[in-house]
Length: 160
Image (cartoon, rainbow, N blue to C red; front, side, top):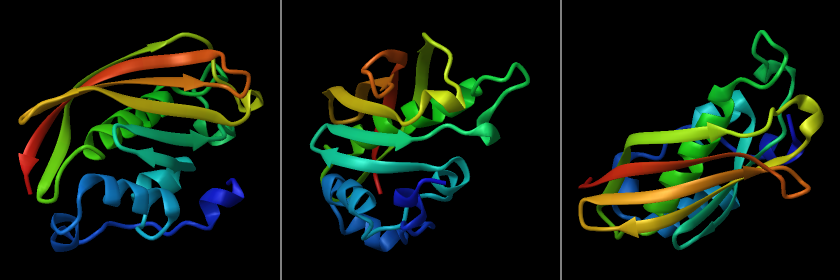
C-alpha cells in the first residue's frame, strides 16, 4: 500500500457532523486527512489527493490484489475510482445540509491497467449541478497522461 494512503484514517463521518459542513469543506477534509476516508479506500488502496469546487482527484497504484482472471486490473477497480472522483466532485459544489448519491454511471475502459502501469489518477469534473441533479465526467490517466478509462455520472442531490 502506498505510504500516502497508509497515513490516512478510515471510517465514516457522523451524520450530524456531515450536515454541519459544506461539500467542499468535507471533500477537502478527506484530501488533507482531517476527515477519515471511507473503508473501501483502505480496501482498494486509493486516496483523495486534490479537492476544489467542482473538481476532485483520486489516486491509486494498482497491484496484484486488483487483478481479474486475465491478469489485468479488474474493471471494477476503475469503476470505483471513477464513481468516487465524480461523486465527490458533485459533493464539492453542495451547500451545508445537502448530500448526493449516484443514480447511474457509465464507464469506458480504453487501455488495460496492470500493476506495471504505476500510479494512476482519476479526475472528476462537474458538468452541471442543479437543485436536484448533478452530472460529472471522469478520466483515469497514467503518469504519462495517457487515457486509460473515462466515464460520466448522474447524481441525485438531496437534503441530509
